[in-house]
Image (cartoon, rainbow, N blue to C red):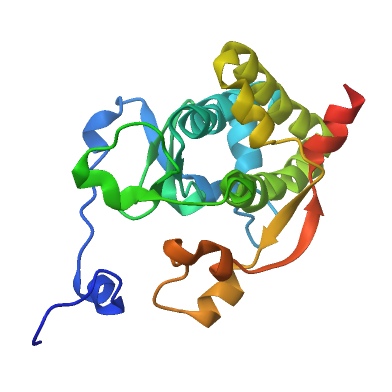
Length: 246
């Protein structure tokens, strides 16, 4: 092939390889790993993998979800509010480490492509400047809403409700508590909590299929994120009602 390929050329992805460090030697002998996507798996008989994990863990539903939120959600909050750093923490990109089927910690994958500094004010080494992008303030928090709330949490709720009668209000109540605890622990980010409000009334529903159909070689052009994002409707933010209730 003659010439050079631009950084955004689709052939770059087709002809390249992605090196991922093995996590085998980073877990204890009594631990195992699963993709977070597996938490959403339901077999042909209607049995949910998440249900089996919780039942076998010896923990209550509340205890299990609390530990899961501690190792997955709370670190994402700190990365966002402290460092303006976001990942793409969907199910396939997150590896859960379990011990006795209890959540212990997580590994993040695809950091080479799916990690960004959003309007970061911290000093970034020149070698990482490609990870720094400019995004309108009202779109920054959408990363959490889309990848975490819409992509994972809203699908966990019906599984927990069916198996344990664990209600939507109970689940989002735990999420709310993690946010409030974080905000109380780090009051120095109070201005950001106001600007990037996790308790606003509604949140966007991103349509990945529409984005993929529009451009199947690069779903999102980060330099033109506003034009690239495809949403069909606004969803009621479950945290908004809980906040109103106090």
